[in-house]
Length: 63
Length: 400
Image (cartoon, rainbow over all chains, first blue to last red; front, side, top):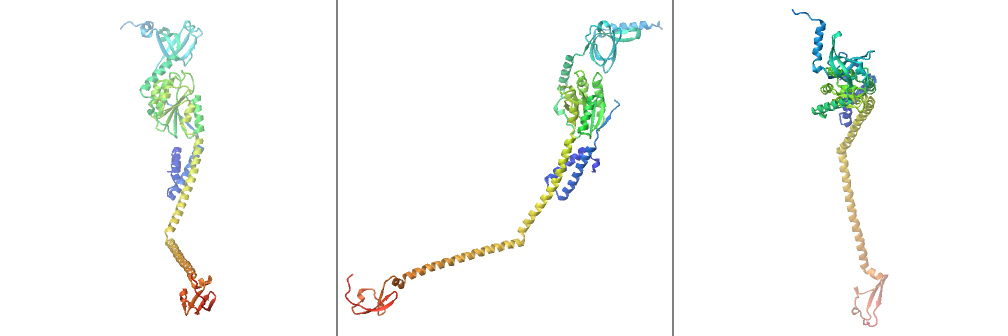
């Protein structure tokens, strides 16, 4: 899944999962490199989302 | 065709009809004051309304002067009087002779009664409470658009979690119309599929101000909401029925906004921490792989033919050394014993005896061992340590 489609929550949760997987340390090397790169991207993506976030306010009018 | 009647006649019939109905005389009406006007004559003109209807009211100066305070628009009151007809305008109206604010005592009683009733129904049960999303995306807010409370909420959200989208369903938050509007606002938000949590809030105020949130209709609408609801009504110390039925009660609107959202500062920190753990994790993976390879290399060397031969060779040489050592020991021992024997042998030899100063006597090649072998005049050979000499036997043997 490309990053731009991910919500903050999805990216953050996926990142948590990757960190947990990498922590155990018994992955095949290629996998751990792939995960590492994905994790780095996710973490930067999350930071970027927070940087750019601006509270949006809309209103339901026709009550 | 009957004779037509005059307006006055018909109006009189209506007036008589209304004013003879005991249900409309000497009654108490509860409602909210609106269109309030005090005429220069001192009479009061206003309306009493609730969510369903409105009734015009008048109060004569003679009654007004007996009141301790003059009501204002928006006040919830109970008024006493009768329904009559004002013929000149063809209007029925309520002639009040006494107006009382809805008693705080009454409100508490109503509050307790409703609380008891809904509690019995299980509307406050803990197992009904739904968890709020950890990362809400769209927040529905039911409150008044221009209330300070909504500003407070926005400020907190902007600081903590600006990823959020707020959808305001504006409503009155006090007065008799407020409950119906709040129920409608909740309903509107519930028709949308994209909202994952609803905040129902209002700033602080008197018990009357907060009363809409003790309304049974509002309570039921919150309980029936498909989307989880958090309430933040009034101050810390205010508890409303809405609080009890909500999935989560926050002490104030701002506190609700905090409870609803993760804090961006915490998130940034934990993102940094996770990035660090990524580095560490991948480093550890490589490190542990490297160590594992080194271990295997060592193990492999241990079982290689070269190593085995080296081990055998070592064993052989050990055995060799053991053998040689054993052999050498035995020879040494023999040599020592031999030496000992030599010494003993030497000690026992005739020469050794001569060395110690003894003499040996022989005659004609035979050793003389006794006096009986000796005769006077006999030639004998005497041997000492350093040589032999002939001698002749003389004298008589002494008796020993």
